[in-house]
Each structure stands twice: as C-alpha cells, then as structure tokens.
Amino acid sequence: MIAANEIARTFASARKSGRSLQDFPVTQPTSLAEAYDVQEAQIRLSGAPDGWKVAAIKPELREQLGAARLAGPIMKLVDARTGVSSEIDVAVVSGGFAAVEAEFVLRIRKDLPISKEFYSEAELLQAISSVHIGSEIAGSPLASLSDRGPTAVISDHGNNAAVVVGPEVTDWRDRSPEKLSSKTVINGDVVGEGGASRLPTGGILGSLAFLVENLAQRGRFLKAGDWVATGATTGVHKVEPGDKAHLTFGADGELALNIIAQQIID
Image (cartoon, rainbow, N blue to C red):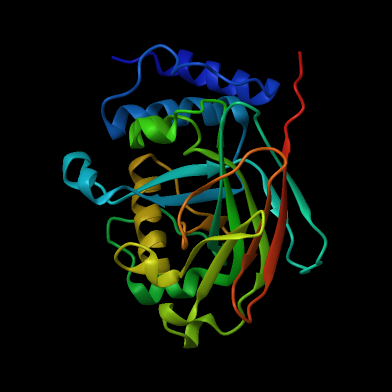
C-alpha cells in the first residue's frame, strides 16, 4: 500500500513554498485508485477546490488504466470574465512543470448529487449555467510529472496550477463542437490550433459526464457554482517564467497570459 499522506504532504509543501522537487516522493502509485487516494489526501491539506479540471489520457494507456480521462481539483481560479485586454499574470514553480492549455470552462448551475442512475445528456445540459473561454495553467513542483503518466499527474492535483476563466460563450448550445475554435500562441509563435472537437468522445458533455461519475466514486459531487475545465483543445504547451501566451477563441474572445515565477517562501 502506498504512503498516500506522505506523498501528499511532500507535494503540498513544495507547492506552498514554491520550491521544485527532484523526484516523485516516496513511491509513485501504480493504479488510478491509488493515485486518487493521494489526490484526496492533498485536497485535505490544501482546502476545498473551486471546481475540477478534466484531462484526456493518452489513447495507448486507456485500456490498461480503464479510463479515457482523469480529474483533478482547481485550487486557484483567476477571474477574467470581463474580457479586459491587459495581460494576466499566472505563477508557476520555477524548475517544475508548467504548461498552457486553451480550454472551455463550464459553470455549474445546480447540485448534481450522487445518484444510482447515470445523468442523461439533457440533465447534464440543464446543469450547465454557462460556458466560458479559458485556460488551464498546468503546473507541478515536479518537472517530470507529465512524463511519468496519469498516476503521477492525478497524484499532484491533476497537474493543475490554476484555471483562468474568460468571457462567456453566449450561444454555445446552438453551435457544433467544430464551431468552438481555439488557437494558442506562445511568445509570438503559433503552437496549436483546434477547438472543442478535439476533446475525447462526447466533447464538453463527455468531460462533464466523466467527472460526475469520477467524483461519485470518491463520495463527492458537483455543486452549484463549481467550475469545470473540460480539457485541452489545442494541446499541452510547455512554458516557463518569462513566457507570454495569447489564446484566441475566434469571435468568442481572447486571453493574454504572462507566466511568472511563484515567489519562494522559506
């Protein structure tokens, strides 16, 4: 049995102090169940999340792990819904892992309590208050976290540093996934283009359905006001302090991000 509490304490301490880690603490979990045990232990140390991020698991690992997606808590939410054009500072741990992802972010209208029956597509649609353009800032004190695979990623808050929520997509219910487009530019170079159609099976609603089931298995449920980052739409683009990212979502708006180093606290 893994030392979930010890792993969680090491990650939580590194995140709080802003110091990078050289290796995965203690022993990396070998199953998703063990990894979520570590995540739960770290949430207990970090406090209640503002919502949840969903990410795709690489296709070649899905059968082995028994899942196409993974989840993690959003512990920092940056509100940019007013669409102000100035750059938004987002901090990451120097020497750790950091990446920018263009995403569509949901706001939950009402509680989705644990149920014996799966929620229907219509019920999930009714539970969404709004959809926003946004960005997940993936981040961990451990530079190799992403390379170590899903069990490592899940263990450290799902590799999440923050989620930036931008302006609302007002007519998303009437548009196909192909019409919800996105592009990511890092330091002036286009590094990815795509949109909601690049998400795994089910798209935005598929991410929400997965999350509802994932949380239920952990004795949790989505609550009114929660935010859900539904997954990368142009890829996962590594950044470091000093980089600038410009995310555009067609006519739905744009976000300008300035990656800065998290202050080190002794």
